[in-house]
Length: 371
Image 1 (cartoon, rainbow, N blue to C red):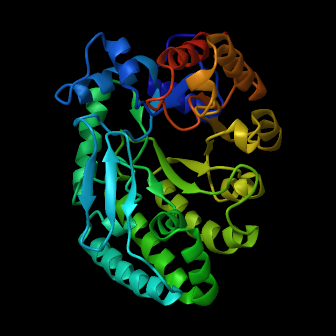
Image 2 (image 1 turned 90 degrees about the vertical axis):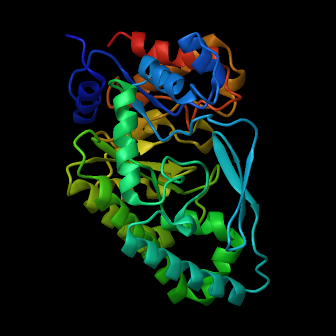
Image 3 (image 1 turned 60 degrees about the vertical axis):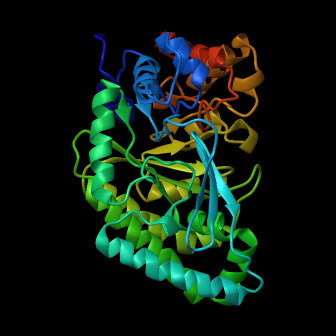
C-alpha cells in the first residue's frame, strides 16, 4: 500500500485496519541518540530543535518530553516546604515537610485542596497537583500556555504526532507528595478527606482537559498512574473499582467528548484492573513491562480490540542487551500482538542509560517488519 503519514498510520492502527508498517512510539531523553540522529552536538541552545528532529526521524507518536536546555541540576524550593531536584529529563522530591501524625497530613491535604481548587477556578497550573518529574506542562503558569506550547512543538515535530499533555491519576499525585504510608493512614482514618482531595484533583484535571482537548492536531490523549509493583497491585482491587475507576471514567468522558482516542499509562502490574479501565473506554494500554508479567500474547488473547503500547524493556534489555536480543524482542511483541494494534517503543523512555544503538535497532526492526 502507499506510504502513510504518521497520523494516518496511528489512526489505522487504532482502527485495526491495514497499515504500511508498524508504528513507533516513545519518549526520547538520550543525548547520544539525538547527536547520532542529527549529526550535531547537543547544547542548551539547540537542544529543542535536535530533539524534535530526532523524534521526527524515528517516531510516529511521542509522549511528553523535557528538553536538555540547561546543564547539571536545578533545585527548586516551594513555599509549601517541598524542595525538588530537577535534571533535564526527570525530577524528584529532595525534601518535604515532616508529617509526624496523620493529623499533620490532614492539615496539609486541606491546604492542598484549597490551592488546587483556586487554581482550577483560575485555569492555572497547580504545583500541588503536579508530579514534578518534568512533564510537558509543569513550567507554565496557565492552562492556555500549555495549549499554545503543544501547538508550537507539534509544528516543529514535522509530522510526528504528539500525545496530549499527560495527566496523572489523583492517587498517584497523593503518593508522590505524601508517600504510600501517609496515604494509607489518611484513607483509613479520614476517608472523607481523602475522597475530597481526590475529587479536587479530578476537577482540576477535567478543567485542564477542557482547556486543550478541542485541538484537531491532538488525536490521542493520555491519563497516567501508578497501578502496581512487579507482581501485585499497590492497593486492594476494591479501591480501584470503587474509587479510581469511576473518577477515571470522568476523564475518559471528557476526552471522548472531543473525539479523542484515550491511552492509559498504567505503571506496573495491572492484570486485575486492566479490564476495568478498558470497560470505561480506554483505547490503548501502556506500557507492557516484561518484569511486571505484562505478557503481550496473553493480553491480545483477552483483549482483542485494544492497542498495545511500549513492550520493549528499558530497564535491562535496551541498556545492556545485544542488538540481536532487541530484534528478537521486537519481532516477538509484534507477532504476539497478531501483527496489529501495537505501537513499538520502550517501556517508559529512551533514558540516558539506554544504549542508543539498541534504541535505533528497536525502531528500525519495527519499521522494517514485513506485515
